[in-house]
Image (spheres, rainbow, N blue to C red):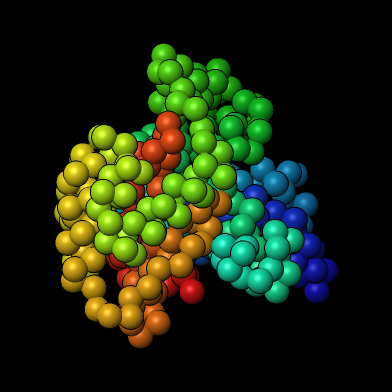
Length: 304
């Protein structure tokens, strides 16, 4: 009984931290939840007193299990049909939910999704790193571990971990590239609202006004529903693709604002009210630089 009580206390203390690590490693809500659960089961199965640092043990367990999961799914990822997009963390947009940022009336998953600022663009950048680079980068950048702690978790020297981190950080935040000014949440919100209004009205000219000239669109159907199997590049091509999609929609199709990875996006609904997709964006220099459309039904299971 004492072990169960202790594990419940630890679960409350470390669940969010471990999920944050696993989700960023995998880009999958379901897999991240499974691995966090497995880590606590592993802890519960250890002999009392055999774990000197519980937090480090749990982080190491989650990191190793994430790498094992990535290794096992490598072939599947290589055969994936079309662009791969991460499973989104989606929460109600505050104005639409009738609940403020405090999360009143929101279930635990919704509350967590509100706190977790993990954009689709950021998760895609992380996917470009090797598994070890991703783990070292996240443990240092997100969880603020020192290099000795990271070394104990990933099984490399502290010096090596420092080198891996700086290499990964240059890949995520290139120092030699000028940083585009961020429009901030109000600017991001205004662009997304204009995008949604342009789609709703079928105003392609207005849509072109919110897209950057070299805008790109990635759609993920996973080979299970119709989606573009290659990225679409160029504002005119993106607008033309979206116009074609709109023409094929059944009457009653709707889109509502939502927080997607902590930023304003859209959730689309079929005429029967079922979730049909999630749309998120990367905004740069007061224009939408990338549009991400997720319609793979396997990745929409947690979206209401």
